Amino acid sequence: MKPIKFPSAQTILLIIAGLVTLLTWLVPAGKYQTLSYNKETNLFTQIGIDITTTLPATQKTLQALNIKIPLDKFTNGDIYKPINIPNTYQELEARPQGFYDFVKSPVKGIIEAADIIFLVLIIGGLIGIINSTGAFDAGISWLANALKGREFILIILVTTLVAAGGTTFGFAEETIAFFPILIPVFLAAKYDAMVGIACIFLGSSIGTMCSTINPFSTIIASDAAGISWTTGLWGRVFMLIACLTIALIYIIKYGKRVQKDPTQSIIYDQQQQIAALFTQSNTKTVQFTSRLRLSLIVFALCFIIMIYGVVALEWWFVEMTATFLVGAILIGFIAKIKETDFIDTFVKGAGDLLGVALIIGIARGVTVIMADGLISDTLLHYASALTTGMNKGVFASAMTAIYAGLSFFIPSSSGMAVLTMPIMSPLADSVGIGREIVVNAYQYGLGLFYFINPTGLILASLAVVKVGFDKWLKFIMPLFVVLIVFTLIVMTVSSYM
Image 1 (tube, rainbow, N blue to C red):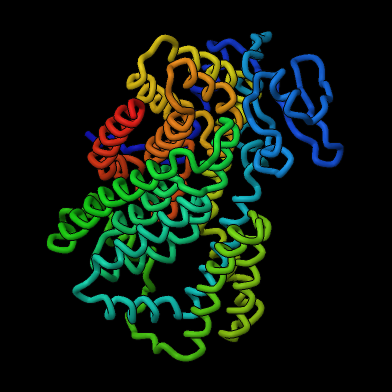
Image 2 (image 1 turned 90 degrees about the vertical axis):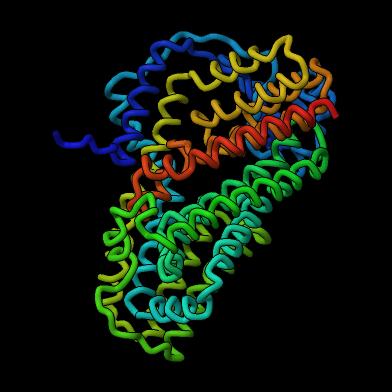
């Protein structure tokens, strides 16, 4: 009997999209009224079910709508997306999605996610160009020799640096660019590709889960909850250090086991396939010339400039994508690649990541089905009602679990913050705890489920390395359980402090 093969990432997401389509037939349709700020007119816009109203942008208006957020959070741009208005949920006529809507959802998702999809494709082209020069192979060979006997430093360095990016500016989608670059380095250090995936993806996940000054989660969620982002900061710093330490110990122990005995690798059966994917087919040594060094410097500068642009210059996907495109062209000139060869290599490199781009689009399509079926706000409304009458400790744990569940349907951290915080944060007042507990529950719940959330980035990340979701689940589950238990203990204790 032939063993049943675990489905591909694209198939998993299409199955999820189909189930969510069925959900629109079972879950009542409903919507909250929303409020947004117009900087040009200095007015609020209240969008109701049937009517849109403009209101003066004053603190009095916010108080009348039971929104406990300082006015300056809107006027200075901290809250730039429409927020849900508490106590305005209203059931609507059902809008179930049919087969035709299901078929259209991946296309709509690809259109909505065009910015990140083009980023991924251009990065693929850049990687194709740098690989064709031989510079990357020469650099990896040098690095592997430099770290010989101290390979664990690579795990600590990569995971910590990526986590630092996650906790400060929400380093998440950008990490897809690092898988094709760093996986060969881990392979050269005698680890398997799972160690590389873990360092990059878990580093980003733990960093964003325990965000400290991340404007796309901590700050926007705190603003929407009506508190300062510094409230509860030291608790999040403690969580960042503790969770990162636990993850590093787990990855290093697994990595050492694989180094000693490669058959202990969870992806041992894919060893040759992955090695062929990330290393050149020829075995001749590439001389690390000045031209190749300069190509690698330009390559590295693309990422440094991207990070600086996001942090300091308010760049987003268009600017990041343009940076990588310019970098590819510069490397082409430095390496003296012919124009026709450059185009062919760039297109082939982009094509190698086309599957990743499609996964991102299909995942976004799941959100499209929910929005069109008007069930997102209904799920939020019922989730908020679950915490009625709970004591402090149970409330904190339940809120973490609720946010983990909601993140399946709303994987965006900033989207989750502005949609849920005006509804969820006042619940803390009725229980008698600080609203920072709800902000932390939002971060930890979202962050923990992100490790395995198929509508997040994990499937796209695994697709870059050609590793199945089942293999990832086998690797991550022990660590996932440990972090869940640790987080719930911390949340329970902090709710009584």
